[in-house]
Length: 217
Image (cartoon, rainbow, N blue to C red; front, top):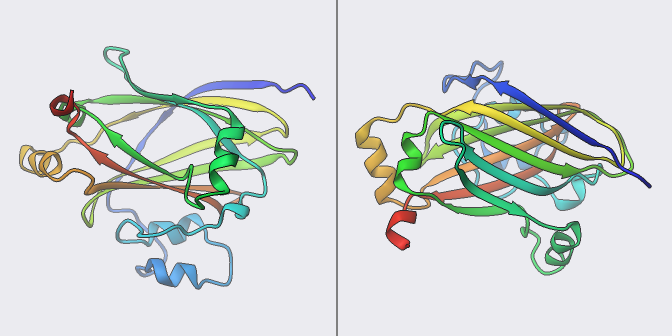
């Protein structure tokens, strides 16, 4: 079956750290015990990064599969990170490790923390079910402090398609003291990426960040 390509570029506004929610703070353990689907509002109630995953691999009933990811500096157009793969690679890894394909350990130079604007290109495939409203909430923490929170809207995705979208977003201002702490404590900067369809959590990916690339060359 032939597939179509959907390409678009959206400007994404950075969410404030003080996200307004309709509920009290909630823990990872409480969300895991929740009997109803986890929603966007639930995620905003989390006060720190998670230790584990809030979804199982088979929760992705839409068979959404990420096959391309690129980060670039919008000022210089320099590619800072890029990975591209075939779908079968992730399927093979899943047989050995349930968390395979859901965790990334990034290494960037310290100068990454001074960037003003970054473009994140994502390529993904959709299975045989249409995706009416595909959305991602990405939250970045240093230790237990929320640094930034982004809201990415992928919109409608037809079934059996390959899609590509680049979100351009502003980086947060980080003071020199915190920047030094983040550089000196690799992998203590973490992110959770939560993917929703129709406001129901279907995927959860995690990442850690070390700003040591210049020193490891």
